[in-house]
Image 1 (cartoon, rainbow, N blue to C red):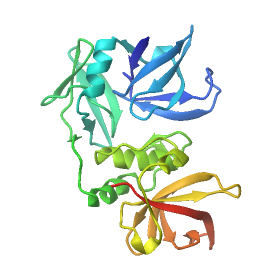
Image 2: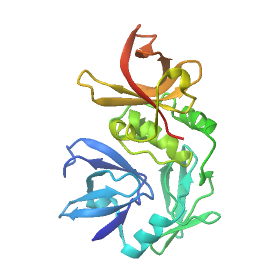
Image 3: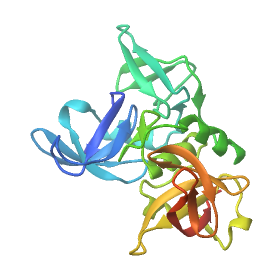
Length: 256
């Protein structure tokens, strides 16, 4: 078995082993994974944090030992807290990292990948935060353009948005909306929900395809064209600009 870690800012994870293939998610700096299949130019991986699988370019990661992988997997994660920032290494080379990047074995302002030492002086998140913080973190991504498979303030999809917001608050969600819908406690009515709970929406076939974070006063923040705020009612999401419902409500769930 082989293992790897993302040593670049953001790396596309694709459905198939091709640059033309659909991007299904992204690896952020410091995220580690198991290599399921290794080919000449591409590797099929399974991301440790959420179990998601896909293909990445072999030029865009660094291999790690099984021992390093296991130690990293049980260590308490520390994530970068600035929307965009830089890390440097002992050669004074700089790498840009987005919010939510993992800083392996971070102590004070230093961390290591394999035997390489890196330095980071920005804000970090490393513990479970109160539920009210979910809303504060959600607003970091407001107006971020929608990007299928995206996980950053420069492009994000609906489940990437909820996953990243919860991640910054110390809670782990799965990657897709339909998978996230298997987590948490079902609430019967909108009136039972609190800001920070998740609302899920389905298509005409009954498949859950969308998710957003409930705000106070019957509003929701979600990624639809961009990360935006709309009205939530018992039917679903009402978009005032379009003067129609854009998503049909399926279920509301309390995650924490």
